[in-house]
Amino acid sequence: MNRKTALKRISAWFLVPLLLASSLNMTVIATSGTATGKEGTAGTSTASQAPGLVNTYKKDSYEVYLEKYKGALSPATEVVINAVDYKTLYNGMQVESIADLGGKTGPFLRMGDEGGIEWEVDVPETGFYNILLQYYPIKGKSSTIERELYVDGDLPFEGARSFILSRVWGDKGEKIVTSDGNEFRPNQVEKPMWRDTYVSGTLGYTMSNFKFYFTAGKHTLRFNSIREPVVINTITLKQEKPTPTYAQYMASLASKGVRDSQGQQIKIQAEGAVYKSDPVLYARSDRSSPVTEPYHLTKLKLNTLGGLNWRYSRMWVTWEFDVQQDGLYQIDLRCKQDFNVDTASTRKILIDGEVPYQELENVVT
Image (cartoon, rainbow, N blue to C red; front, side):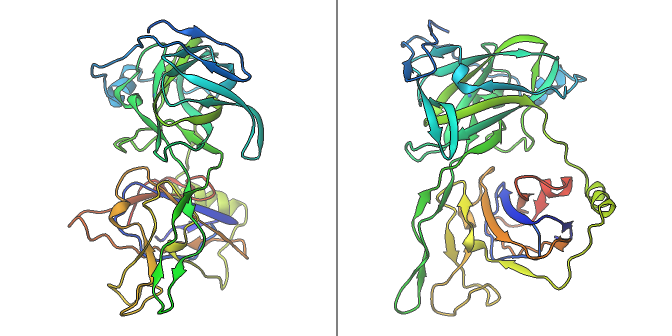
């Protein structure tokens, strides 16, 4: 990857299917029935069971939805909804107010894994808005958190039938090394943390985050639970920060006097990832090339990550490292994709939680 990138610390997230990632060499800085009204924001509230509004018919695609409102503006206004200020609970939804969680002071709202919850929102300007959630993946059944999103009592488009809120996984301690020098991966455990995530497609056919059209005035947002409980802090209607092109990015850095780093090289071994979206993204052993580090002809050495397990869209992996010298660095990736013949594998790369420039939205590896 011959793009230069400047930052002081990197948390690089690779999304979309990659079938085998070997050592990562980086020289970088880098989801109506009768419902119950709200019962309070403290303690536990429960909605009575009632037949819910279910859209079983096929909705228009996201592309048709966008075309319907073609030409609509994208207002710079931000509208923040505190999750505890919900309006209505549906179909057995159980909620609970939580005072403190994950190093933050609330109140926050725990949303159960059945039923739905609805908020009212007053939108000041007509146009398209992205929807940003701040959530915490609390303990459940270790499945991916999944919700359905309704706007004004209706599913706006087919893609809103399911959106994912990732859990966070990581290694439980260090790798296991036997007396004869073979290496085995540690167990994968949850490492929950607060996350900010835009509502987006589950299947990856639309790689950008969803935009939702609102007219000025009062509207309702409803999340229907599909799988797993979750704690939500805020729901924000806003615009994503625009991503510059590579040329714009470099011009901005040049105007700030940013230059190439000198005499620096940082090598990150892929098997050393600190966080992952799924427990199947664990370290693996590959003996197909002596260039892969670490390598041994006969012994098992953990030297790669991903493989066939990393084939679904919106899976991600994060590496972290410190950088000693500010400046521009090139990123080189050493990867292998030998599961689908004549098929390229692609990734989105984020540095410190953001895509620095548009060309990193879809990197062919």
